[in-house]
Image (cartoon, rainbow, N blue to C red; front, side, top):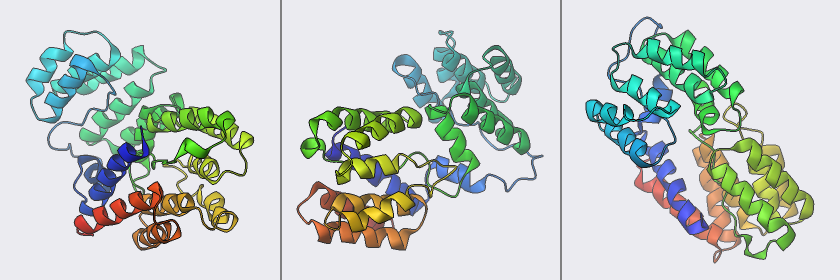
Length: 293
């Protein structure tokens, strides 16, 4: 994904944070308010990471057309399809069906993630937390683990904070590793991303873009402050690098420190007004203002 394209996703997340309107944010904000004895209304969300007909089924499910979604899921026998089929008939036998899928796929973080959602929507909060912890442990290098950690740690924004760099001036020896690491990060494979970005940083230790990307890759919903001790010193090492200020701003927004985040975004603009980092900082500030925050 190009920096121009990636900023769209950043802006979308910032708008959601400012408005507080996404389903995921609502789920995270309300988790833990229940005594754990009352079932939630409606059906739990699906997070299947699928394409093709199954993606169409997920869209139908999200739109409330569960019977139509279920008809598509029923045509396939993959684990995501079977999870989707179980949720599509919610709550009729859904929880037991997902329990069986976990039993038959004991190494699947995807199955454990959805068992946690099924437990949560059934009002069994403690069981949901246990399943989400299992999901994060079983497949730590996966979107399922990232989502499970989001549910377990609702005080930060959902997902992984974007890494945006202009790789054109990066040493060619490190560039391939840098771009591959960012791609893995975008796909929510944090361990693979960190390996590639560590390797890129070893090859280009004095490149601010590479250093920033490597620092950002230490983020986890469970440990959201880890990048700060690495990013902070980079402001002194590279005082004219807007890439550092932009990512400090993004990380501050991700950890819900909005005032400080805005300050860093403004510094990214003033540090290098003509850069791609400045243009993205402007877009983020505009999104925050438009979101009514």
